Image (cartoon, rainbow, N blue to C red):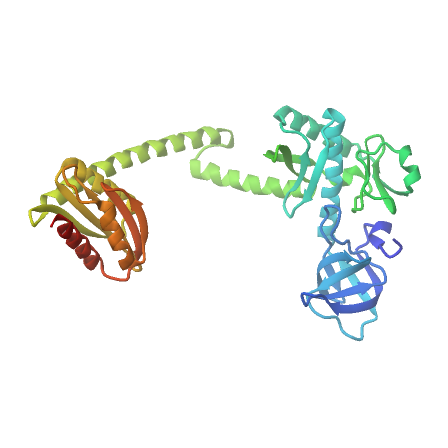
Length: 403
């Protein structure tokens, strides 16, 4: 542990260290190993530190086989011996705030409801804990948040202590430890005692406010999303910006945004219903118009029509409308795009030609697929032939089946 400066002083922002070695890993990434380091490697739910070695960016830090590897954006100068090291302090302190905040919020759920935390994730924007419960009420979440912020406002000390396994019975640990050596406790006296290898501030006051944002059920557990310290201000700024934009868009004060939004949605639904009704009416007129220009091929009433860039749903509706209006009609509708052909075929109640059989004859011509039954079928594929030729094949199939 002597070489892990982040344990000796988590507030260390810069230091100098000897370069022990510089190599590439199996993926071809350059990494450097120092005789001591303040860069925290990924572990215990806390992400790695970033910064620079001799001005070269550190993009990842991992502890592998007992050595801490500083992965670099580029190779260090081969003549380097002593290395000037700089920690990205904003990132480090943010992690310290979030990690300590997690300890406090987790302990609050235990103190109030005896809800244990079984998972922790420190993300780029939010932090989450998984509670070993299946339900969480709004009142419980707010009560835990209030207690957590009370602990913050009291500015309690956050202590770290290295202990032996024999000393553990002297502490009321929140959960059992998974290690028996190099045991490090993070302690908030009279509130939380927990084994942890992360970095934390000296006082709960430095954690800043703790705000629960949301929670959800995950595999019969409850995942609570929250932020601490500087991230609370970031969230507040983002949400305030959205609120300002909404007040301008809806022309309503902040307290009336919910009502204005509800009214806008309801009006939109009403307009959508009106548009749907108008579209249905237009389609019915279009169906009648197509039937009036029917092709009486071989005494068969056949509708053949090619459309450009229309939805298959519209063609299906048109075909159903026409077969409802005429028991004798056979309908072939085709939509054509730059690279695809889609078709719908349908028959009136008095016709006997199988639409499923006709569509199966068309699919090989366009490398297509689809489905349907004897009365109604549809499909689509590649534009390997023109729409006119595909419809001609369909008409020819009808006449062949009749004969």
